[in-house]
Image 1 (cartoon, rainbow, N blue to C red):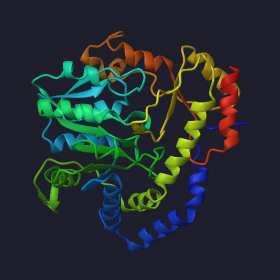
Image 2 (image 1 turned 90 degrees about the vertical axis):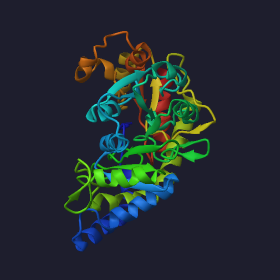
Image 3 (image 1 turned 60 degrees about the vertical axis):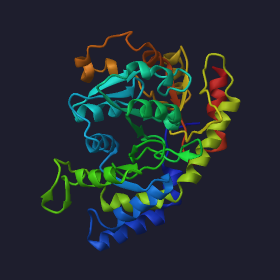
Image 4 (image 1 turned 90 degrees about the horizontal axis):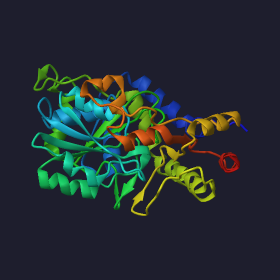
Length: 364
């Protein structure tokens, strides 16, 4: 049996007519930038997240960098980010001219270790970016307490966590502002790039709405040195269709994850350590093993496709060699990068397919 890492067919087959109709309606409208579809999706997504405002943009990286711009965070400032995350989290900080300050993750959750954050805070620190990695919410209530103590902004990187819940609140509504990505492979994905900022901060919402459109609230009148980062009308229409199905799709992923957690039984494999306090949406199902290369080859031989999220931690990437870090500086992030492996998980994954993966893993 051949198991791809990701399969869009079950999802897109079910909603094909809705998607085609939304394209046709947009095509016939002859309005393609910042129109009714964008306005409608922004209202729908803010309501879904439980926030007052949603400002769509071009992608998840832009969402984070625009939030930082909106809070006037830049040169001379520091922003704390997890050492274990996708590089976009750090790039957003670099783009505004601030300094990236890494804090190690908790080996059991892969998210930032809340017990190590305070030691990294200095007089230059202006914000903490909490990443909900793999769709698992970070412990934002404890991070929020630190932000209050030191007068910092709490920014959520929710690029992988659409619909995830922490303490009865959805991600996006846990800090001062949040950035989402709608890259096609996300739980809520466009058919191209897309992103959004959600917040309850009126002043920030007004400012970032202008920043994403050349810094302009009124055409040809520019208040800020903004950027061109706009979700187009077609992608907004597609996302409105998909948003109606998101909770069902997430529930299906949770069923698959539950089977993995209950049935994978191999002493060489470390499963995710899940607590009842959060509701993970399983953008990624990560396992760890000291024998990753052997397992990867074994699964490939059995036609099971896997990916590594992520093989090189940010501090060891060539792009960040200017920070001067080397091997051993962030050992937990390095350990995760050497041992993590992502199993196939997607909406519509059949019971036989899940059990095939489990059976192959248990025989390893």
